[in-house]
Image (cartoon, rainbow, N blue to C red):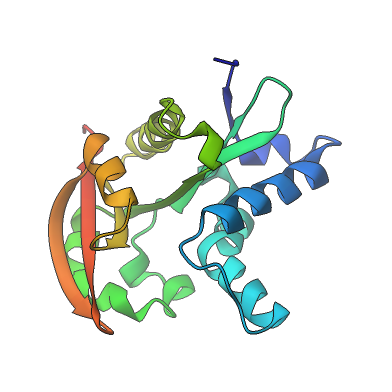
Length: 184
């Protein structure tokens, strides 16, 4: 297997290849997303901002990228160490109201994606560990991800130490709150 390096996004931002890497990160985001079609470029941009952009803008120190041996972005994890149910930046995520008790216990949230060709090689686990290590270093007691029942990522999270802590019916689907202790 080719060498893969895990790097903090904020430490890469000042490098000359930042623009190229941002485009590669977007490619991974859109190719890995459960949603593949958009009615307009504005809708696509809003989707990106909701699930990726705000994290890169407001929490770049919490973003980690996986780079292949040639320095290309092949995966990432973004998130926040702050409780999203109590942070006005995430007020648009109304489903968080269903999980407020749980987000208080597991405040750090994350979103992860890998290029399809790089899945099942342990890279996702390394990204999760990098984010979890940051949370632990910053004194955050737990990490969570929210996904829908039946999504392919549920098995990934469970295999990486997350446990289902809650579920809620939201807009015709069941959302799962998956959490992992930071080890404090």
